[in-house]
Image (cartoon, rainbow, N blue to C red):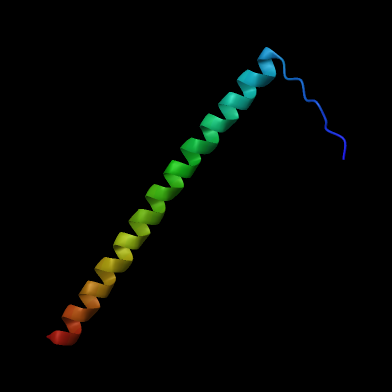
Length: 54
């Protein structure tokens, strides 16, 4: 298998860096939303348990 060389100029490197930053930011936002949903699911489960007990 032949190895391929990739050359990236300064602008391409800057764009790649920005893309990585944006992707990281989106991943962090997604994780926050997942955590919010998990917390809501937990609150719902607690409320259902309280309603069953009372």
